[in-house]
Image 1 (cartoon, rainbow, N blue to C red):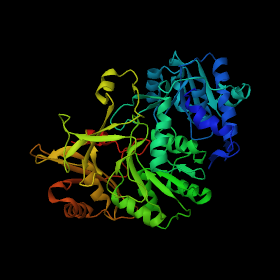
Image 2 (cartoon, one colour; image 1 turned 120 degrees about the horizontal axis):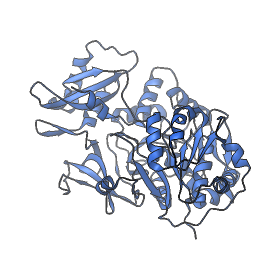
Image 3 (cartoon, rainbow, N blue to C red; image 1 turned 90 degrees about the vertical axis):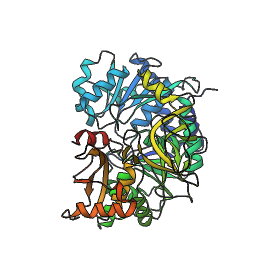
Image 4 (cartoon, rainbow, N blue to C red; image 1 turned 90 degrees about the horizontal axis):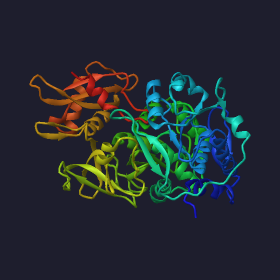
Length: 511
């Protein structure tokens, strides 16, 4: 029997009792929907489309697409055809697309018409690129809808579970994106572990993920988990602003909401300011991408009536492997290992650290990536046997929960003691005037490292005298030596498209 993931996630429902159930519903734009039967048929046409344009098995196809129904058609159709889809971040600059397309040697590009102007200037300089398909209207290129309409639907090819399925490029929170290669078996592994045993995804769930398809977190939320049981996913092609997200929640009434800490904080501030309300009955909410501040989790649960299961995942592991559980949520922690995964904390010599000590988090599980494309040394340092180094620093509590301390590159010592940027940020965010904060090391007059905070205030919050107020607030919450010696009020923080704060950009600007 073939291990082609499209058979399990698409065709199994497309030919069964759920065939006419909506798999995806667009919440904006044309507000289209597609059933599992239609998705099976349309994705089956992709093999014929590729054949007509000379795109062969194991060739790569880049997907620069907004979250609309074409994305699952192309993604699953590529897997059916043995073509490797590469989901691209839709918010990058032209030169970054040029680098990724050249690095991956993509033979085909599928691009939403709205995104074409950003990538079009570099297309003529990509000798490996054979065909460009535009979703929508795009002069001088192939029209995806017309090309697909003329194709016959074909069955998925036979593959083994360890065969290359798709790539994702890392979010670049610490620098340039890297091509992360995943195999067919990775998708079902995440569905069988986190999707089933933590999220508890159900047939009658309606899921909305603010994280987009191109993000590993969003791919699992919006496709892998709901499609594993035949549930329905809501799509938003535009930016997930508080106003747009509340419209989705209040009009379409999802039962599962998947957000990121930045968005939860913005939604709480939006609702608390009287600009909107949460009018749906959420069964469960989840968060990943960056650790969730305790105060944000508590405030959201009070407003929405549903707890947030804060968890940790990565592009390399495809989805969440460390998480809080329904009925067992402790805000300020990342919970415990998801069933099917093992985690451990190690010091600089790879020796296990004890309770209360800080160590780097290593994870073992069946969803780990094969490697980084064209980066052998980086692959060897990250994927070490069965274990994957996450680059995250954690502390284990007495009851076995993991408390996030920061990225390995973000941690620094003050007076010889490790400081967790996240701990300081969480203390700052607990103040009523603070929307979000980022902490990095800066050097004082004695050339010693001390914390410096970049703070975004809530709308209407007074900035006069806030420096001293916030310093005292941090001293009282987490200790006198951890407080930020400098506080800079900013309009926003540099982030990846997935909501992760890019502290390396702040560090680069610190004198």
